[in-house]
Length: 184
Ligand SMILES: [Fe+2]
Image (cartoon, rainbow, N blue to C red; front, side):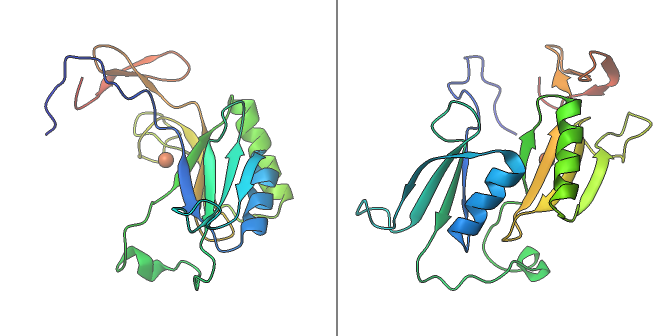
């Protein structure tokens, strides 16, 4: 168990992730088309000596980047498969994006269908408390798709927040008295 810290956490937030892609052009188009990313900068491998990978910096709003795509020239990429979950190097399980609101989330559901992407899970309410829930956690509504390389993407809205006493509060503002965090 991590020791309780009284001082403020110097970390502000989890900011971005750099994901490895097999085809840079294809992935830039995918993230632009699906999630509305804009390309801030794109750089060839070894443009800076210490960085032997091609990088694309993408942004959603005004931050320089919220997502980075990397591609290693000459690497023999293969599609991810179920075996990767049993054996191999560590992988992320999924990457998630929060929508502005539920209408936005529904709009994304339409967009995914228009793009002909397969929804690999959902739409689902992640909740053991909500009668519509699937028994899992977060109180948010979600669905999941794969990107061109099989990175699992979650698109969600309305996650619960945590009150000061550790009680969950639904996005709609209701305290869920039976739901408490492990660490306050
Ligand atoms: Fe998630």
